Image (cartoon, rainbow, N blue to C red; front, side, top):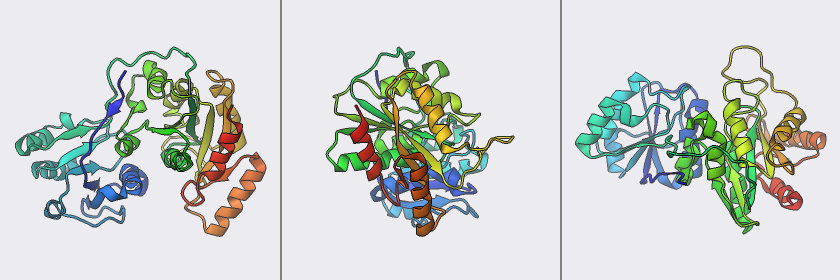
Length: 342
């Protein structure tokens, strides 16, 4: 059974359109952070407020810099390409740059882009394309070990936490593989499975395919998707949780997030110990030994002093290692994981 594999030729130019905030540009931000050696610039529509700190480029600048691939670095709600982006993207395709995107709207279904790419010979690369013939999950226990990132909401740092933990395990010489489940992770890793594009009946089966049998001392570090608390995306999260059969989970949270974003109605984020208990209750359906290895918190809105106090207090309350994956690193969670995994 195949997973999604892509080959994005560097250097990259990150396309930002006119998204209103960094939250909607998380694909571009993720690629720029984890693959900085491949990113040489950014291109935006006028008045776009988002800046990734990359050199601003025109089409000609990109040609002069040797850009090979333009990555559509945005994730608008619903995954559609706004009509006002098409002319600029068509110009880039017409200039011969490959265009890669992880939106639900396929580049290959956008007539102007197809016409421009056909004329220049550029490739249109749709990343959010699950492979055909995914199976229904069978629930069979698999060899090897797995740790899954779970979140209190969408966009709270599950991908960053997984990549940071994989980097820490790799640094220690532990056999580990980062398993991407979303478009940005796939662009970073070059392979994975876009779980949110899989037909619902096959989500758990896709998770089984993504993390197959392996050596007993090998860890699959699985990127999470959505949140069990989110009314819009809980189905994806539960399917991924059951199919992953994780030996451990890491709860990911944003210190600023007090309620679920992007939904109507009042959906406050529960206390984190309650979230952990509920997550493990559902995880135990397919792996009775699953435990929580720690909490990974985006504390970028806090000062260093505030961050240290917050994480220390949270760690005392939960009795688990609590870290910021970028500011403090994942070493405490790695220590806990390797000590308590059976």
